[in-house]
Length: 187
Image (cartoon, rainbow, N blue to C red):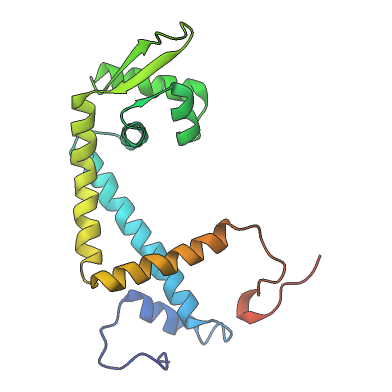
């Protein structure tokens, strides 16, 4: 079963076949919603694989990259408590990560000059370089993938995804339709 708006001469991807297989099984399946969600999931998995490989190629483990990433995002300086919040980790987990990164020369921890109980964490040049090299792998792939779109199309895609994400971040509305466009049952 072909989607009514899809021209027969348009290139087809894996998701087109997926939607085709499920439409007879789920008559209320909205092919546009299923197609969009499936493509977002596949794209996310693809970028995750590229990221994991890029991180590994530069001798980093995922959790090391994540910690360097959050530290770089804070201008290269942070408190362990800030990193804990950014990474959603227990204090002991952050301490372990920072100890390992410090041994590799990627961060330095120094006692705060303002509060002797506090430690300041700083990204070193080696840490910044390792983070940038691993990040470049992902950046090149993102540019390759989204480079098939014109700048206006990329902007439109970003705007549309923002609207979807705002709906995901909003408190659940009882008026949101369920599968097949049917209203959700009221509790």
